[in-house]
Image (cartoon, rainbow, N blue to C red; front, side, top):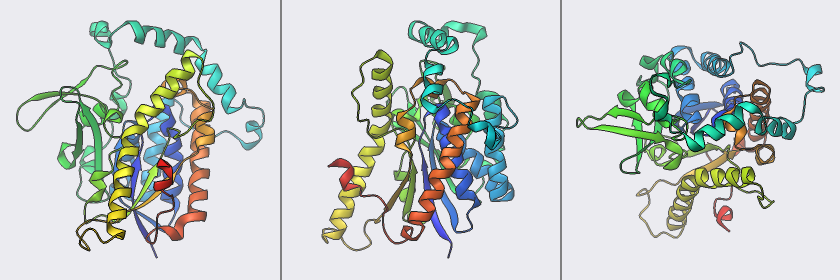
Length: 343
């Protein structure tokens, strides 16, 4: 029996390659049907690639779309290294440290701290723009395939904006991935005629879960988490402190929504609300906190082909483990203890 699921795809820059690997494995499974996707930042780009591919030609086309997107991000046609070569490659912490102290990152970090993206004038360019513009938006906006929701943050109000249907444009994807220290705010003309500016959706919903509460969508939400929820060591260096601040801030909205879901679940179990008045959701999560704990914020910004390849493989392995352990839970029960997450 095919299991229908919703996907919630977190943002996290180049760490979104982990999500690529997870999606690559889920799309291989004949037991899984993707009914809805909510994505933020890198999650929005992954989500758009999957939706376009599913509409255009099914799971294999969606996987090819993801390969194309990440190939464009790294500038390489293929990220697959021979198995024998992997034994001679540096470890993940070594790659992370090399990127953290690399000249491109150190210079870029210094510039972003003292220079506004608006200071570049005619020399400003968003490297994601040509990639996003080459996506097939007539497929992305189609009524066919999974429901798609893209999250961004309104700069003026600080509120979340969820783009869906015809509102999903190249600008909406770019807005969802707009880190304000690196990119200019993305301006979008709203239906009421107001020109609104948007920043990264991670500040207000990483990703938003509430669009997936639609009664026509299944009750199972699989969160693909790429920002570690916990770190066992206290950060001491400026980079470690910045890294942990980044993780906490980009997990906070997700944790608030999970807490609300848990509250509603307890109300339903206690009979405090009428049967059918609220949707009882089943929550699942695919993550690799051990791997992500080895990475710094620098590795989100610098798209190292070697690291992206490793993240994809880790994502596939995590999805494989999830399917082996929890496929039967889908449609039956949550596979994580949401209440324990707040204990």
